[in-house]
Image (cartoon, rainbow, N blue to C red; front, side):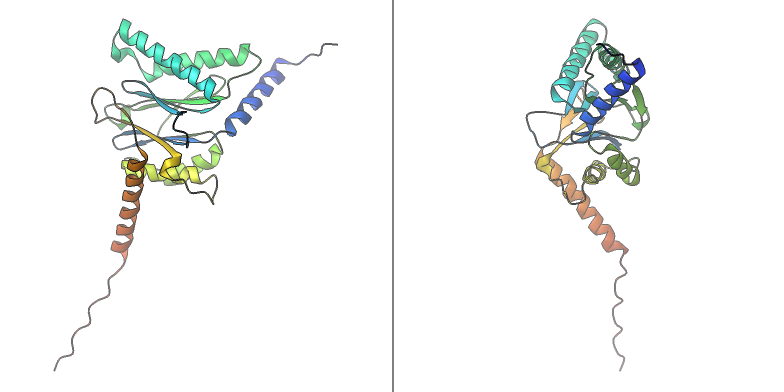
Length: 250
């Protein structure tokens, strides 16, 4: 005998299903720094990327099921290429791409039995920090305009709280990377992330043409070491040196 499920209950079940799938994935952090936008993913794989370039000034980060967000990434690349070719490269924007993704995710969520288990960030670097754009998209097509930092996947609440505690506007790349790594480690106090288990990329506003750049494990180690050295130097400067003893006068 067929049974009835209300639309409200059906949507709630889909949302719960998608959230559980996303929370099982490893986290991704996106945050602004002085020269652009930094992307850091807890991802030891060198074959399956969570962070990718979409167009000249636009990048994409995702958590959830790889095959699902890879389909979305490829669709975004095609959208950007076609619009840039037909009109002008400046007409391809993160806002336009976010709207396309929102429509696709919203349609999938409402019209199919299984929603996509994905969460996305589409970011575009501007001429300065005030013109940077970061959009967060959830499995149901909702879009949020973010500023400063974003955390997705895994224990996102714990990561976001750590970012809130450590994030500073205008931080250097090394400082922003350290904050991001500490935030990812906040999910497990006993875990320490090494460079080889991180996927890191930047949109660097100081570059020309293609502003997206991946960081190698060696470069990640250098940046983390640079920040550690700076912290040690600051700690040393805060200490009051012992005054030299005055020689006894005859």
